[in-house]
Length: 142
Length: 154
Image 1 (tube, each protein chain N blue to C red):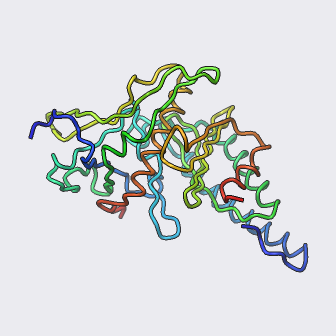
Image 2: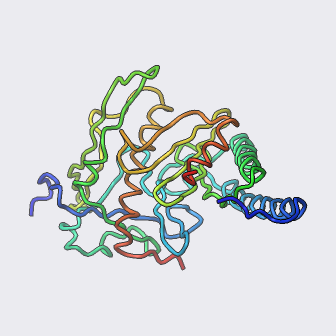
Image 3: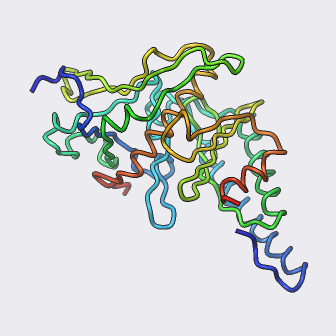
């Protein structure tokens, strides 16, 4: 949802800045946990995310949040983890919709999900900065 | 009952979900638990489940760790997930049907596997993405069902 139309632009910017800084702190905390993971951290042979993956992922997630928040939207902090291959993952859940990011050392992809049927209710593609805002608008059904 | 009998569509399947929140196999959002797709990760791309009826419908007997929780999904819902596709240059080169098969072991006669037929192939990246779609769908089914046995992370 959009932040309400406040009287002053300055106030709106302060709110956005506060929101952005708070989220970056929460995200940093989640990355701290990931940076401590070792191979087989889950007992299921999962790879640890490399330092390069962590840096790349943090950059992308921060950039996406900046893009969304600076456009006047509230953006929840995603659930961040790493997968079995050592990729960093970020997920937002909004009612029936899910937006997944999957970030490796040099590449990033997104998964749009709006149901359980793989054929008709999921979509995968490469993630680029041009996608950030359209993906967010899709997630919140705007 | 013979543990090698085919898994029927109406059978409940138990899956362990790690209980510690930092493991990110579930999150709590607006007071509700959402099972994350990481809960269905398996290095052989064949998530393990236990057949509830061979566990006497006792989810606690399926626990792999005392802090874990148990979610249940129906075999028929798993089979209805759809076809997982392997694509090459945007062309579908294989349709993988999702199935549940018995895989009893000496220690666990209730053990079963969620598999795709044919098995995933092609590059690691393509297998990763195809399997991720399956994990996401399984996690959605588990979220809809909710906890059969809540985790005990403390």
